[in-house]
Length: 295
Length: 290
Image (tube, rainbow over the protein chains, first blue to last red):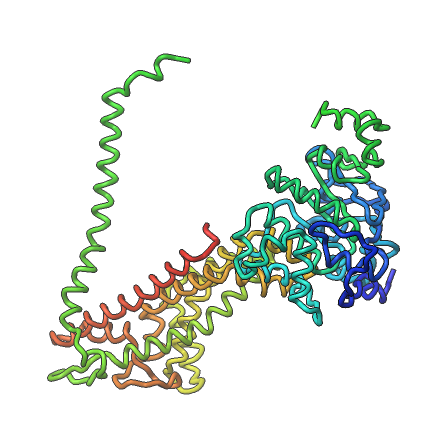
């Protein structure tokens, strides 16, 4: 279906310079200012996403089989399952990163609110600006300073007209990193600790003002304290973004997510409220997995 | 666990070990002999030729009397190699970028890789001959000219630059490309802003090693640039160059000319050494280690 307006619709307008937060917004320690200001100015910006009959392939390997799933706006949805169950592939289909792998393709419908992201004429770069992604390994750009790493989000996406300095500060505040790095913004991004690097990557992602943030095991390379910080951050970020997180760690899914989806052998087995999925799963395989009978 | 493991090694095994060590050490020494001799003769014969005049005067072309220095040869080599670099590095880098970022493992990319390998193996004299036929005999822009030699050298450098750059670009982690793409960057911007800056030191090293290789080539210049005594800054004219200066002088039945050949050879080696050392220094600063 040809949809010439698609590009314009995917690309969210850059937020106007946000006014100061009105008094009714509760103050939080290290609150993500950027994000909160925007929330105050308009309705919450996270959007829902929906999968309909999603099939994904690597060459002839059928990695994801007919998945239907709804990710509610401004919620944290966790995707769990054993290695090779297709959860990361599903995640990569959500911002069309799946197709970057040679021989990989996806079929089915993926929508951001009512916009079909695999539709004809949809600009893939606009899709990825609207749906940000945080990777497993912290990967700041090695040639860039802390400041430039966050600004890179804007520059790489070709966003002009934004006050870069302000966006960098707001994004770093939003990622809970500002207080730690504000005096060393010109130092290389890779001089930070692993946990700080990962929050730098989150800052880089929110600098582009996405609607949805995808996280692919964002804590698996971090120590427990850094993990805790990122988990706290996720809980804050969901006020302004829809979060979809893939994790190997069931405790993490239980701590951060509102709903959890369990995948097995490329199929979605069960999707339910996190508390329910972990306490009274409907499916026998889900129960075996969450109780550690197989992994 | 068997007790045998703890028994001392047999005398025979120790002997084998000692013989193997001895043989490899001896072979290493044999291989070092010519290297050491080359350096020894270069210094012994070449240093005698060095003087201020040697570097500041042009060859006179006289057989008897003052033969002059090698200024024109240094200028010619520097200019020709610079032009060759200006041609070969952008082209080679373009090929490497295509292979790594777009062609990947596709059939066409593999054909290109194969041809690059073939090109690496082509003797330099063949490139000289090719340019001789295509540009000199056809009298495009005169007959012999510095720029034609530069084109011949650039053909020699092209596969070296392309292959070295491909290796370096492959060292740039895919995660960096992915995270840039995931920010909504178009591919060309990922290449310009992330891949190239990250790979820059390694790319520089590869190019400098190609320069070092090309600077000493004689055969491609022989048919394309010819030889003159006087200094020329015009790449549209015949030019002198260090390899040709050596080639001409070394066969002369005149000790002073032969000595000039040694001096020119030492100069060439030192120039290449400087480029190579610079390449190593840049490589050491790179974050991408193979």
